[in-house]
Image (cartoon, rainbow, N blue to C red; front, side):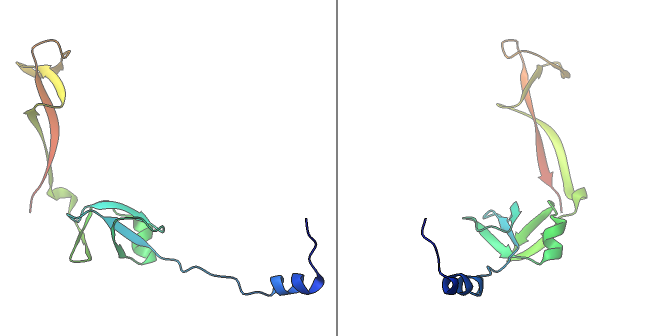
Amino acid sequence: MSEITLEEFWAILHAPIEIKPIFYRLYYNDDGTLICYSMEELPHNYIEIDVATYSQRQSNVRVIDKKIIVINPASYVKKLTPGTTGTPCDPRNICIVVAEDQPHTKWSLKTNETS
């Protein structure tokens, strides 16, 4: 290990410290749905936000035209729908979960937005 001189020590001590700017971002998908809030640089679409918005971290938001739009939670409607994926249930009674090898109808929860 090499020793430093007194002049080098004082030069290091008084050297300006590089301060990186602090930024707050909301990252979102192409359809405007929220991915995450972050202070890091990520490879997604983002908008710069203030510290108050960042600290709230609302999950019921969408980005439209580079602006945050809060979606009213009452505008979500959840509905069980039959399909090819989901929980296998008795074909006569949705309340009875059955094994995959028995006759069944698969049900999954679908979320719709209403305006």
